[in-house]
Image (cartoon, rainbow, N blue to C red; front, side):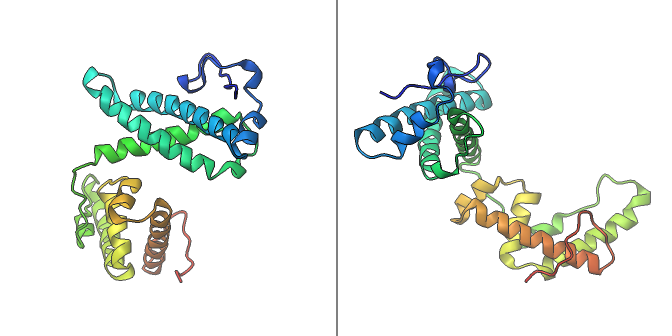
Length: 228
């Protein structure tokens, strides 16, 4: 049977109470996880149990206490552990041995738990995707002496958003940067991936920097290469 790796006293419960001899022995995980048959099934089951403990810890820490939340937290933790397991098994070759395998695995569970919590927080909430949402940009909070310069910059920015971006780039930029929609939540609502949205944001910001630079606004850091 696969031994469970150990953790230090200050570690989260995801890796507690496991034999010290197996703590740094990544081969004890990787070999069976890359095999077939009963050995792999046992390793996967044990890895899922470890991820579930990590996810439970992350969800409870971020989601607060209360008996009325236990069922919700358990559902989110189970979902997070399932998603983390799929992601981790697909990236076994990315493990370089620079940390304990359990530490590396723990990060998958924490990431998926944070995603699950954000999605739950936005569940049932409408995501504003109005075409003219960028018009809400304002220069509130600046001093009277800065209002003129800031007003010119905001006007140029509004023009750049209106004329220099595609409709999809505008929707994503406004939702993430102005409305504060988590990118994983937006990806789920739009039926796409986080990676695709990050690429959209990168392209949109590069276009805006280029447009503002042409109008004499120097922003740091600036990538002035024209978008293709």
